[in-house]
Image 1 (tube, rainbow, N blue to C red):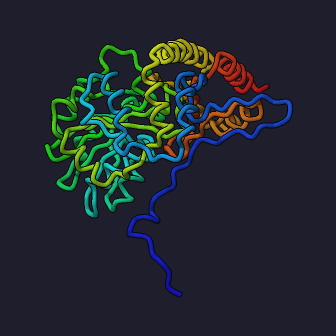
Image 2: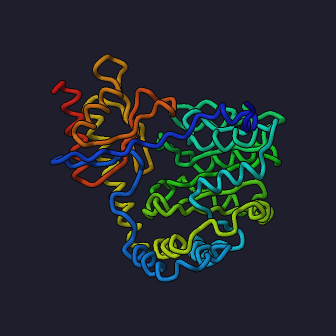
Image 3: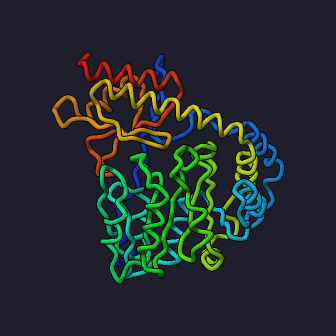
Length: 365
């Protein structure tokens, strides 16, 4: 019997695997630290705006997300006409791939880069080329070495998920200068709001001064709107025009749009979350290091913890041990990091409990 057959390459794609969600048990408090969600939730102003929008759910959204594009423009000093909004930055990444990649093309990502990149690449018939990293950090020279005449796109998460590492802006500029002019550089700045380094720039300047660079961002992280799926891209006019031609006309719902406007305008909520993250990121790195476990230096809202391959002390063993205590971290086998766990920075209580749990695990209790 004949049946529909997927396009070539589709069945070669490994499906995206999200972090596991905890299953509550009676009498046990559970902390989900596997998905890089903010422990504070969204701004109360965003929640209020979302609820207010419920009175008009019969109306289609404004098709270009104009009020949100204008709010983003005010917040970052950008031309709203060069901004596209989407159902999470994931949708925009896929739209970019659909617009610029096809059968026979190549796109470059790095060894431990975000899993959506190879999925978006291969879904459009292109080949995913992996450039090796150095110390869990993107390597500009390795990326440039991977370029061939077929290369059409380079994906760069900066900071990177799941490693938490970043490239200084001088290195990003060196990458752009070394790439052929027809290669689109996609800077994924999902975690940029957590960075406090003087040598970091999320990429807006590079986008503003080149014709072949875009920057994507999300409201899922520091703004706490992951359930609403809102993201955006800043790009050259010709790229915005091309992507808009295939973007769905109502891809961002009105409640999501208005909640995002309120969220980006509540700078006090953002600064509070950033300060908490920085304080506990430093504390966790130091305290976990004291236990003899290596932590990759992070600038994001999570830390990457490395475990030995010794039986009984592996990352999988630690994951099982912590899960029994209601502490759910992210296993990273699908990111080619089988000996590491990623921990989202949570509340003070959650952070202290993880360190206590790891201390008992290392000590064999």
